[in-house]
Image (cartoon, rainbow, N blue to C red; front, side, top):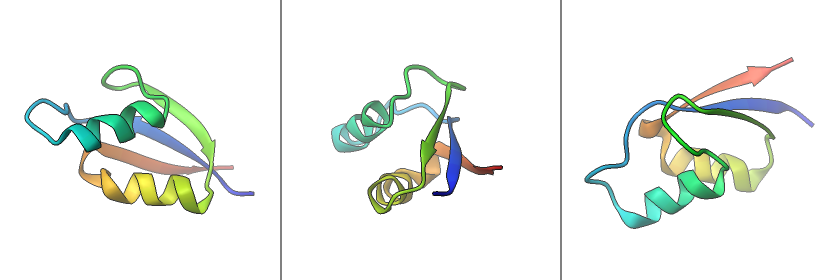
Length: 60
């Protein structure tokens, strides 16, 4: 399974509550925090929903 590094780069202040919950469910705690996840369809959907808040990079 392909792995990705997801980094939270923009604040959720002034954005929808649903988008804040997506950030939280990805395991991101604060700005510039990164997590590595398997790139499953559910993770891809969450990243697509809040793509303007994240930076997603493929990990080897």
